[in-house]
Length: 327
Ligand code: UDP
Ligand code: MG
Image (cartoon, rainbow, N blue to C red; front, side, top):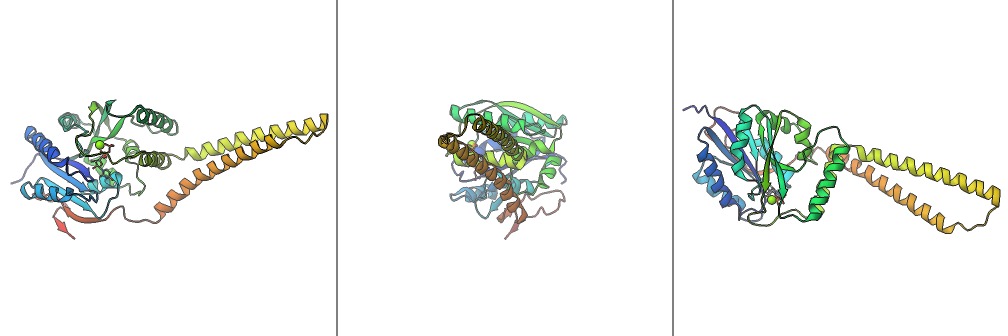
């Protein structure tokens, strides 16, 4: 029996999501029932969870051959979990979905519709940010503004990873093998025809968020440094301004000494200048260090992730490497 229907892969990175999975699965099956014109693949990436996540997925998979999974050998983080999933999906289109139902699966039919109209990247933009502190909202807003100023690529604000990608986008993303990933930037980088849907992001359904401020800061820095070398330019710029100011100050001192003579009372201003210059130098060194560090990490050429167990959907029209494998 050859099935001509288009196949949609739903890609769910899951890290300690045992509480969320049953509800998520119920939503996904309901979705598939509502769209009989498509075939579905539910691809779960178990990102080294320490709870029952993978056994729940396996149990679901025992009764439902739409379920596929990639079990990573440890926790690699969501960015890597996503590329691991993208490497293994087989659909004509792939929807990236969080396990915690913060991205409403109800939006997926609308995404598919837009995809059928010819868009390659249908992304969901959140209208409101419920259940987030004003500090989080404020920092994210300022951050996006800063990032946008430093690059020519058009960034998508208030968008997460919730989106539908045509196969060609998935294939494009597979070619990005950088280990310090900032996938949000990559979505913009690859281009293709994009369409924006608005939605309301709900607070988490169950479990707790795995992001804290330290990780968010790291993600933000990764975003800046993987996307643009503008901070290097800013540091040269600040250096130039400070040097110019220092030069003017030297002229002032020399002239003052020539005209009024020396009174040797320069200690506070000396300290101020020394401390300020020291700070600027450390900052510039830090910025350079960020880039050198990234170069170091990428130059090792390590694999992005290792898998413990992979099951890719069976009943596949002859595609390469689509049989299930156990290592
Ligand atoms: N996630 C992951 N690996 C991690 C952290 C998170 O695969 O190291 C997954 C998590 O299971 C969820 C998604 O990424 O499906 C989003 O995580 P979370 O809800 O904690 O982030 P937030 O919604 O607060 O941005
Ligand atoms: Mg979440």
